[in-house]
Amino acid sequence: MKKTLTGLLLTAGLLAGCQTQPQQPVDWPQLTIGPKARSYLQIEAVPEGIASGNLLRAGVRLYNRSQSEQTLRYRFSWTDANGFELPGMASRWEQRVLRPGEPVALDRVAPGPAATSYRIYLFDINTGTATHTQGIEQ
Image (cartoon, rainbow, N blue to C red):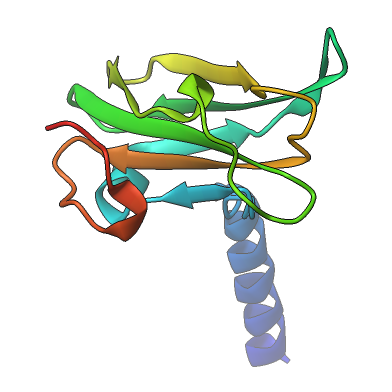
């Protein structure tokens, strides 16, 4: 009887402890995050909507969960209904310095009405150049 009661109390204690742990991050399919950036980024939300002129608007709310300043490289990629990427300045690579714990909102409006979907690329400044990071200036 004592062993059963002790086992139940131990199980209840473990379950209560699990409830205080942070939840696993939500996986947003429209984000591509590099491995180094993944180590310090905390994604809060990926809002989307319609801007004036009936243009697609997308964004990401994040913060730097590390204890040191980080430099993030990011890019919004806009695609049409057939899956082709739309060219334009709205798809250029940009940089943003992230201070520890600083909340940041990045958002953009599609370059035109043909944009029906998007992808947001988030990479650390020190990530090597690969196919999906072409055009990032070091």
